[in-house]
Image (cartoon, rainbow, N blue to C red; front, top):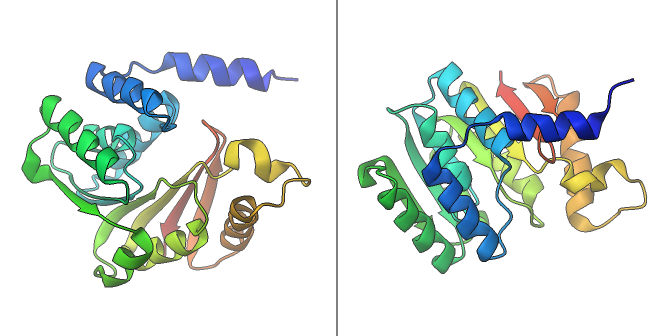
Length: 208
């Protein structure tokens, strides 16, 4: 029998996180914004590197920890990132500039993703990251699949809701949406779904 907690701790400590991303992580914690874990960030960068993704959309910038990991995966990648908190978005942008990321590689959009996503071109992006923990995540994933090209990826971080999904007593709106996402796409013939138990869960969908 393996020790899941011990494995998780060792996995997180295994990652050699770049200094610029550690700086963004510390800023996130100071602002009360929970960033993706180092292992999740490393996984995101690997997905970008393996697939050669160049056109990326991120829903939920926070202070840019996941953003920097995505860009770290491919020096040719360009990122469009959406965040409704103006202060967080500006801080994320400043942190990326100070880390040496060329401004031409990042397009920041301030506003509610629910209003912005329907206006974006469908089938044009290599990877769409849903990095949101709020109500409406189900619609975000649906929009993400519309935006992704055939063969492209949709990635949902925080997909196990900090463990709430596995607890049947948890029935809040966000947890219910996450359960719906995991259940529906596990059997959807239009995607190939993989759930990785890193961080608080990462769901990866390959669009057929």
